[in-house]
Structure formats: structure tokens, C-alpha cells
Length: 496
View 1 (cartoon, one colour):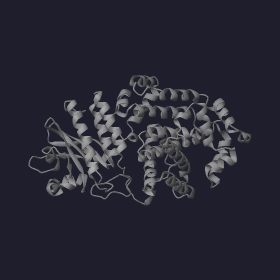
View 2 (cartoon, rainbow, N blue to C red; view 1 turned 90 degrees about the vertical axis):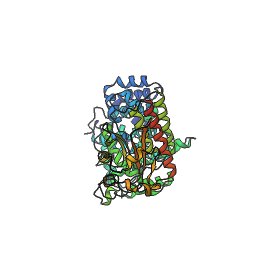
View 3 (cartoon, rainbow, N blue to C red; view 1 turned 60 degrees about the vertical axis):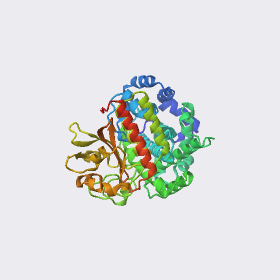
View 4 (cartoon, one colour; view 1 turned 60 degrees about the horizontal axis):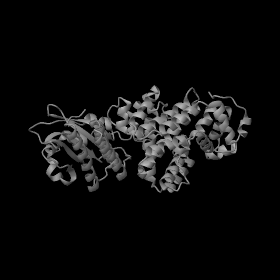
């Protein structure tokens, strides 16, 4: 049901008059939300206490911060139970952007049961997720800013669906009946594109600071604007299906503008289709499955979902692997250093280490496993990557004194193992149970040795994508493991 009945004369309103109407009739309360967003953005990055207090003044926002922090969308492992813990685990900037997204959603959806508005919000999150992943692939160090920029770029369509009434309904019908770009339909019917309404509202609500400018002298900001532009358009078209000609044309334009291969673009789009579902859950949005067609790999006839691997089976194709990202590695190493200087929780540091190995080095599966108190079992405590939950649950090994295995071997050899380089020597240590869990192929393995005492291992591979390991990746793996060992030493070797 649409919020405000209209007559067709409203279509004659200019973009400025529509903005007046939105402010005066439908979204006057959003002005307060806009001010709150600006207040959050203005928080001093170094002042954790002030940001924590600001969040705690709003129970709903505090709840969303915790839920989003613990969601799969954040690619973290380990329960976050307090806002302060979230600030340490994720960092001030990431929590700030969760708050911004939360305010954005609440301010626009509050009190409305308009299904078109809810659907538009789902498309907006899809666009934001695509933008973030494109920025991540490019090596942008502030991908969450790109995510927020894409949210703000959809202010116009969202506000229009909130107050548009019968005019909005008629526009929807024109979308469905005309096989034209949405921007053309909007200009023919309204006299302007809804993206222009986004710009006008952002200016009035002082939110333009979040929207990257395509004409900026800063090349990074230009690239962000291009990513947001194409992601926003594509998210609105995708309900037509991957095979729609306009969708294909838009993907081709995106490839050309961003200088990416077809594989690179499709990899991002497929990953985004999956990740959007997780983002929607984190922010209490309905499942957007009807708006986003199944990812390309799922449309190919494969019965297994992406990343889901069964024992003894080959991996489904294609697997959306993460490319090595040296800039992201440096970012995570800096965050680890900051945590250690502030005596941060060991769990937070180990999560950062795994994130650096997974996203920074570009591994498929990463596991941190600890030796049990009885020193006879090795059990995964944290994991990231493909089939994370199932792989972590299976990564549990009984260590027998009279049986060779790669893990006990590593406990007696401080140096990290690059299996392919030592396969002749180590193949006899790869028992049937180990092969059944991790499969055949190359991997990195490093013992966690603290003051001469073996506590566990770090494991990483690219077996799912079948990409080769290299010296640069091995060196980076060693660097992250060293940080973990140092953190354990500072903490007296105690975890959890």
C-alpha cells in the first residue's frame, strides 16, 4: 500500500518541488536522522568513548551494531557481546559505518509498510555491496565509505517510493512495460531522473559529503563514483535477470569504465548477490531473493551452492576467489599493531590475523586450531573462507603418539611449512583422516609455538580455487603468524 494518494498533476513537479514535498509531507522526521548521521560521522576517530556513548543512547542502534558485527556479512568469527567489544574487533570506522547504515534504514522505513519502498531498500543494499566489493578488488583502503556512498546515492528513489503515491505506482508500471533504461523512463514521465533527486536531497540534508564525486580531482574518488554509479544502476535492473540485454550492456559498460576483465566483474557480481542476503539480514531487511536472480554459478545447473564442498568431491565451479591485496595486508597489520599497543583482547587480534591471511593474501580457507588441555586433540577455534562452518567443524584431529601426522611434525619444527616445497619429505605424514578433511593439494601450515610450548597451528590453502601458492604469499603468511605468536607471548599464551 502506498503512503500518500496523488493525482497525476504531481508529475509536473520539478525536482526541487519534489524535494519540498518529501521534506514537508513524507520525510520531515528523516531530517532528524540526517542530523544524527552527520553527528556520527563527525565523531573523532580516536575517541572510542564518545562514539560508544552515542550508540548506547539508542537501544535500537546498539542492537543493530551487535547484530551486524556478528553477521556473516562482516566475515568475522567470534561473538561480539558489547558495543565496546565491537569497536575493538571491527575498528571505529567500520562501527561508524554500521551506525550510518542503521540510521539510514530506520529513517526511511520507519512506520511504512510500502512494499515498493522495502524492495527499493533491498536493491540499495545490493548496490552498496557491489560497490564495496569493486572497491575492495581495486585495493581501496576505505571500502565501507564506498558502501555508505552507494546508500546515499539511492536517497532519491527511496524517498520517492516513500511519498510518491499513485505517481510512483504509475512509474512502476512504466518500468515494467517499457524495455528502456530506467533513467530514460523517469525523464520522460517525471521530467528528471531520480538520481537527480538524490543529489538535491543530499544537498539539503547535508549528506553530500558521503557521495563520491565523478568530477573530483582525486582519482580514487572518481573511481568510487564510477563504481557507485554502475552498481546502483545494475542493482535496479537485475530483477529482469542476468540475460536481459540492458543488464548485459550495463555489465559491458562497467567492464570498460573500470578496466576489468569479464571474469573479474562477474566474480564481484556473483559474490555480491550472495553477500547482499547476509547484509539484508544484518539490517533486518526482508530476504531480497525475488529482486536478485540466483548468482551466475547457481544458474549453471550445479546442485551444490557456491563454496559448499563435500568430502571427497571436487569444488563447484566457479569459486569466487579473493585476489591478493597488499594494501589490505598493510591495513590489517596496522590494526593488529594498534590493538597490541593498546593491549587489545587476544581474540580480536587473532581474528584480525585470520582476516589478513584470508582477504589480504587471498587464500580460500584459513583455520586457527588449538591443542586441547589433554594435548591429544587439535581443534579448530576460528575459520574463514569457503564452506567455513562445515570445514571448521571437520577440522578436528586426534593426535596419537605412535602415528605420524603433519601437525605433530610441525610442533617439532618451528619454521612454517609450504607443503609443495617439502612434499617428498612430508607425504608420509598426511594420513587418510587428514586428507579426507583438507583434501589433496598444496597448503601453508605454521605451528603456534610460544616460549617453546606448542599451542596450535595456523592453516591456509587455495585448494578450492585450485590457484597456485607462491613465495610472496608464503612470506606474508609468515608475517601474520609472527604477529599472532607475539600477541600470544604478550598474553601469557592464554586464548579465549
